[in-house]
Length: 398
Image 1 (cartoon, rainbow, N blue to C red):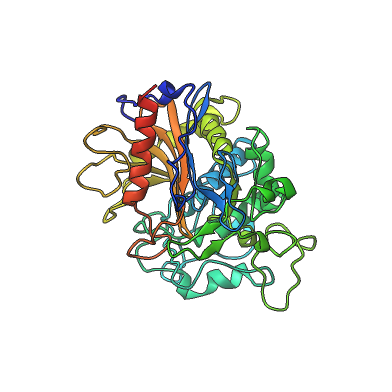
Image 2 (image 1 turned 90 degrees about the horizontal axis):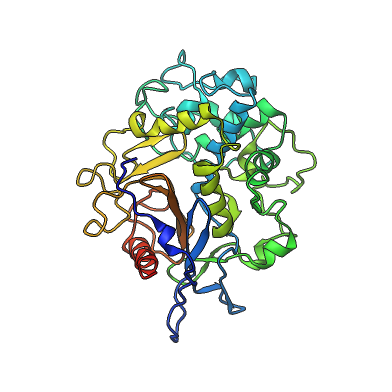
């Protein structure tokens, strides 16, 4: 990243910025800045649940949507460091069944292709495979694929469908259930309390869950009645909601690796710190792999995902050519960042390591109108950009 860093370390000692009293509370939103030594809430406002009137707090757990893919990539890199995984190996060799594009049946599909959205997959046929259904059958369906070149050379297209396949390969390589693998390799080493689809979060975290609402005001996700003991994983009709019988390496789609992580923003900031500053978290080799996003991830024909590599998105590298500017172009024209965006169920979120590599920020905001192309298409809205501008102003006052 360029050296023109905006240092959020100036935010030391900043108290959360609560919205001015008003008749209608603002949408639940949290912005947290971090550097090597500190984690500082800058904006904390709105209600975590409208029925109870409970105000959101800085580390209340929320579904962070596609930032979950970055966490999946970190899990894969940690397995590489354990010498249990090869990002360039044919995933068929792990799974024991063939993963092939019907348009390029002789071309292997690797984790690097999948994590970089270069495998030629499509979400057109759906990407959720419930417990009791076959992941193998899903990828044998031609509807799962696009004729855009062989895997690796395929034109970039953001596809959620690759995430269940990646997570299942990680299970096969490790012999561990995906949620437990992420806990062992990412959450626990960084002192983070988080989970996937509420599995293992426990009643204390569930009591602090942020309910997601659409811009129309209706509940979109994670209302109290949807949490445990209700079933929190996708299950096929007539199949019991029972994880005890689940065999790792068969269908990790049930953990929603594409978007199902629940975590608070203070804990998400710890993951950002781990990437930037924790030498024991990622090996030099894995860190070098991530650094390749700066020169290997360029895509063509994309306005938002203009630069993407192994689960990491690079934004604002090409101002004027791409519509991926999160930061005010007048005040911060040279500020680029690496991380991942998230958008689903009326929520937008982000984890961004800022230019210069010494600071970052994480955030979410709710009740955001869906983008013109529908959910999961990406893009920074005026609401999202306004929230970040307010956070920078808050940091700059101190």
